[in-house]
Length: 62
Image 1 (cartoon, rainbow, N blue to C red):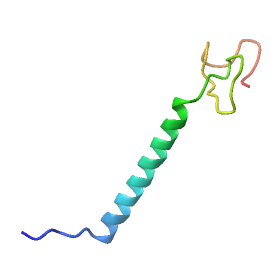
Image 2 (image 1 turned 45 degrees about the vertical axis):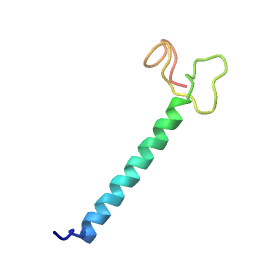
Image 3 (image 1 turned 90 degrees about the horizontal axis):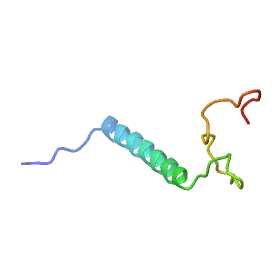
Image 4 (image 1 turned 90 degrees about the vertical axis):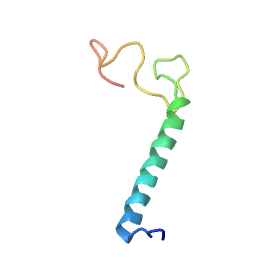
């Protein structure tokens, strides 16, 4: 039984899916090491969620 070779469009779609997976994995690995911005010493890679979700009362997003 011969093995079917993929068409050019299938190779392109597989490449796009592989690139998307790589971006998601890189983003996930960076998110694992991120600290919350309200922490006393937030790093440059902090995420905006912390004690409360949304704008601070009487203030705005930082």
